Length: 266
Image (cartoon, rainbow, N blue to C red):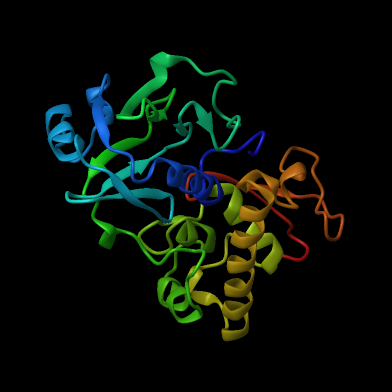
C-alpha cells in the first residue's frame, strides 16, 4: 500500500482498481447512499439498490481516472474520485493518505458503500465531495487511456490544436488519465514546454512525447503514485530542474499550476 498519494490521478485509480478486485464475485446485500448529491447521471439510491442488490461485481476496469465495476447482469457501475476520493474494501485502503485530503478517515465522508453477504464492504470516501457514482457511464466521452495510447492516437489528440500542450493532455476527452502532476512529469521528461501549442510538435517530438507518456505512466504506477515523479520534490518556489539545475518556472496552464524547466523544455 502506498503511504501517501496525490490527488487521485491514473496511478492512484489503478491502485483502487487492483484493490477492487478483492470485492469481485461477492453478492451485494445492501447499498448505502447517505449523500444523494454524490449520485450522478440521474441515479438515486433506489435505482442503485435495484441494479446492484443480489448481484456481484465480476470485473474491475480503469479507463483514465474512471473506475468501472462490471456486474453479473446489470449495468456497470462507474466511480470518479475527484481530488480527495478514496476506495476501501473491507476497511483496507489502497492509498494510505492523499496529499490534499485530511490525514484521517471520518465515517461522515463515506458517500457510497456496498455491503456484501459475507459481511465485507466496498466504500467510497470523499471529504470534498468532488467525485461521484453513476450507472452505465458513457465511455465514449473519454479519449484513449494514457497507459495504452498509441502514437497515432496521441497525434490525433494534438493535431491542429492551438491550445497549450499541457492543457490538451489534461483534456480527458482527448487523452484519458493524465492529471496535473503527471502532465508536468511527462513534459519535463520529454523536454517539451507546457506552453507550446499542442499542434506545433514535429514528428520527432510527437514520438518523444508518446514514449515518455507511456513510460511515465508505467513508472508512476510501479512507484506507487503520481506524486513520486522525479520532478515532484522541486515543484515549489526556489525549485531547480533535477536534470540541469536551472530554476524552474511556475506558470498557470489550463487553470492548473505548472512547474517546468525553461532551459531544456522548449
